[in-house]
Image (cartoon, rainbow, N blue to C red; front, side, top):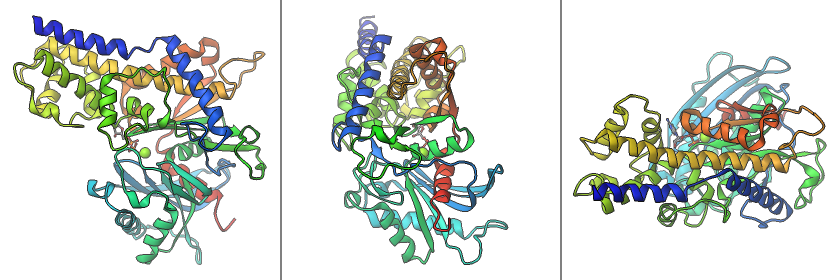
Length: 463
Ligand code: ADP
Ligand code: MG
C-alpha cells in the first residue's frame, strides 16, 4: 500500500505541474501574440522566427497542368504527382508513393540524404502512367515541402537554419536545400525544376485555401508541430521588399520553438529536453507533438517504477529505453474503451514486456496518457487563440460574421481522437460560444503534398 500511495503521489504531482486552467491558457495565448509581433518586427527579435515564406498569392482554383511534389519532414517522405484541371475542375487525378527514410540517413551527411531522395523521386517519375505525361518540350516542375526551419531567399530557394524532429545532418545547415536537391537530381539525369520551396504548414495552408477561400491559418500536429497564417504585408516591419500586390504574405511561424514562462513544464520535460538532439530548442514542440508525447509518459512511468515499485520490485528494463513507447501506442491505450482495458494490457505486454497488470494499474496508465495529451491539446488551442488574436478574429465585431477556417493536418491530429476533441473544445471554450460559431477546423488531408504541387503550379516557369 505504501508503494501505491507513493506512485499516486508521483502521478498527482505530475498532474498538478501539467495543469492548464483557462487563465493559464489565456496567458499562453497572449504570450504567443506578443512573440508574433516581436518576430515580425525584426530578424531574431523572438524565439518565434516568423519566417517570410515568399508566398503572397494562395491558390485560386485556376491552376492547371501536371505538377510533382515531394514532402520531407518526418519519418517518411512522400512523392506525388497531381493533374490540375484549371478553373472549377480542381484536382483531376493524383498518384503518390511513400518511402521511409532509413534512420542512418537522418544523422548522416547531406549528399547521401539528397541522393536517396532524388533516386526515389526518379523511380516514381518512371512510373508515370497514361495521361500523366508533361506536355511535349516541357520540363517537369516540383513543389518541395521541406518541413524544417528555412530562411527563404525566394519562393524557390532557401537555406536550412537548423534541424528538428530527430534529424541532425551538420553539413546541410546553412546550405540551400533546393540547390542540394537539384544537384542530386542532375547527378542521376532527372530533369526536373524546383518551382516552389515550402514547408508542411505552407503547403497545408495552400491546399486548404484551394478548397475553401476562408482558410486563414494552418496547424500541423504530427511528428512535430508548427503553424502558418496569412498576414497583412504592411504588418511585417522586418519586410523591406516591395509590398506584394495581394497585400498579403504567408508567415511560417515555426511555433514549435515558442517558449514562455507560462508554459507548464515539469522535471520530465526538462530531462527529455536535455537528452534530446536539440537541447533548449523546440520546447513547445516537445510538450505537444507526436515525436515526444509517448516518451513523456514513459518517463513518468519509469519514475513510478523506480521510486514506488509500480511494476513490482524490479524496474522493467524496456521502460528505460528512450522512445520505446510511441505516441500511436499511447493513443491506442488512451482511446481504449474496453471494460478491462485490454488494449492497455496488451500494449504494456508487447512493448514494455510488463505482464499481469491489474485493472487498477491500467486505469492509472490511462490517466497518465490523459494528463500528457490534455496538456498538449490545451496548449495547441492556446496557440491558435494567439493567432486569432493577432488577426483580430478572436472577437465578433458589430455582429460581423466572418468565418475563420483553420486547416489542420498531421498524424497526431488525424488519429489521436482524445487529443483532437480536447483541442477543439478548448478553443471553443477560450473564444466563447458566439465567436466559436465562426471558427471552423478543417482536416486538410495531405494538404502539404497537394499544396506544394499547387504552389509549383502558381510559380511555374510557363505562366
Ligand atoms: P510527419 O509529421 O512526420 O510528416 P505525419 O503527419 O503522418 O508525419 O505524423 C506522424 C506522426 O503522427 C507520428 O510520428 C506519430 O507521432 C503521430 N501519430 C501517428 N499515428 C498516430 C496515432 N494513431 N495516435 C497518435 N499519434 C499518431
Ligand atoms: Mg508531414
